[in-house]
Image (cartoon, rainbow, N blue to C red; front, side):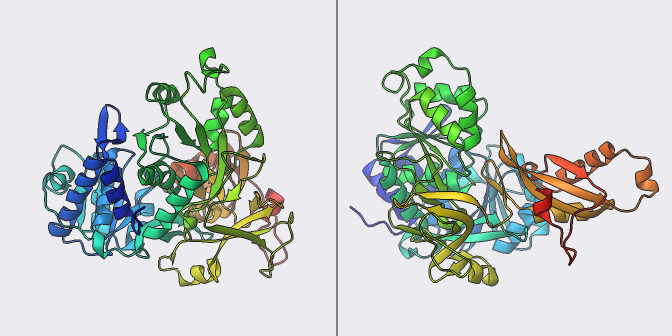
Length: 520
């Protein structure tokens, strides 16, 4: 088997072995492996020749799920450049920080984000080119499709080393400022390879991608993994309406469905035609052989009821952006333990340690550490964070876990304060900082609370400044709505607290620090 050292080479190998096979399906559109390889080749040549992009420079990608996302992903890599995926739910100021921090020189986007892109170009000094994925041309942007029409045959695949950065994936830090995890080519190749071994993916598999490709979980499991294996991927912009996804699974003979816990929670309670839940469904009507849940903890009840209803294995895994992201999966065959996130992938080591970095005994709780080829190079421009997070080759995850005698991992909590909203990381300090900018707010504290639909959501507690003419004519309900509206203008929608509770005071310790555990 060919030794694959970088992601660009990975696509080349799959295209050579499966050139006529369909790689991507998007509505009525199909893209073969050969076409995906050639179009990304042409894009890389245009980035090098026309846009003068040099090896190691950063190109941001702000797109909804569509084939152009995948073409751009590999085109950027073949040019020797680095991808900066951008969360499509972020506001302009949030994107601005990422582009400035990464030094992105180009942005590939769509008309949906054109106004934002123009504003970013005036505010981000490094950003010089906007590449627009649209058939409608504008004078101020570069036409994406014109970059694919050329047939030059030059790229930098031969110059890409396995330890070169491939992707800078931003994830919120404990300070509330996003941190760019530098994932190398081999971090991602090895994670795709290890995942394929763990759940036995083959060229015959057909994935459906409903999760956003800017997210590390979807990028690896719904894009890189199937491409590594020569499998097929049907791409959706959104999981809604879900009936459309179910129809596609049956009609297109999808074999692997990847989702987040809230999706499986809905499905376990959904009223479906009897034929879809009949005992023979897995063999005759429903082609699914495997469902994968990731990005957040899967309730044990959801797993049991889903499998009973659909007669399809639901495999829970665990990962984090800094690990490319998959760390563990429950085995497809053999023992699966409810409540466990399974066994570490091949080539991945895990252990749990106490505050002195001493490994804790079996069954006791400690911070989960990860070591392997999938662990990031480090955080971009964050030397102190790297010292704290990467020690002697081990990644300190900040998650509290215990391991049993068989090596199964159980996450029991988070060392950090992160709120996991449908697999998207939200840190309280970012919300608190925004609240403190409001003229009425004296104190603010944000915690996470459980939510049956989203897993977790933020809840904010606020103390107002002394009564003034501004507040005396407003009800408490009016002020809560005003604060929520204020946050919606500054933060992505999934970061908005589900509740804001106004209090007379917040509990504090002797040094004046707010005691969030009391609020919890």
